[in-house]
Image (tube, rainbow, N blue to C red):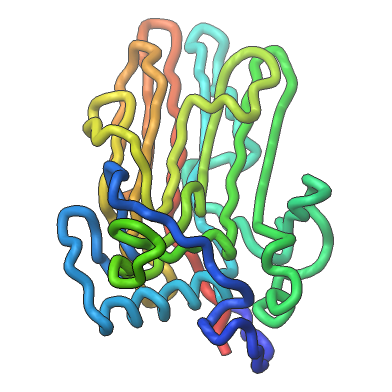
Length: 275
């Protein structure tokens, strides 16, 4: 991974360049700090809070490259070889990084320039890392993949006005997303397959063989494995699908006499800058 330039930043004295949003997670179906304090195991400690801060600072300052798998192929047997709709032509991980996919939130477009740790001193709230693709054709494939290093929160198991309820730092909603769609017409934003990693949410638990599945898992982040909430979705087209929280992955396949289809989206890992 790239070596970042060392620097010092005063910030707000909390490890970040602003005061993070306070969220009362006590009423959520799922929530977890990055150090693993969660709804099912809510007891925290100074050590667990500091561990969640350390992991949050790694995500905030050093996140460099999201490795994802997103893929779709459709084979109509009578007509020959499969048509691959995804611009990434094989079901293997690809990299969405801060160099090629820096996204200006205000402009709603990719811009040039690396989103380095040092640059985040001034502009972390202005940019994220995003890839979007919308293939308007007879049969359309669209996708969006992104992560936002500033999407972090202070979690409270109760009223945010009482610091005794503070349990640690976690990801916000939709901090990391990988999506894939296959259908007719322009449909970016309305996806058939969806993998999202965050810190809390109200989605039902579901199961690996239902249309939705939400639960606790971890995300490989450099040498770390911070705790996260993963939400997976898949539309039912009559085929077979599997929603794996462990791999943060949705797989859909369909086979009959005339067609053989395979669609995948997953969040595989997050690489960090080194110093």
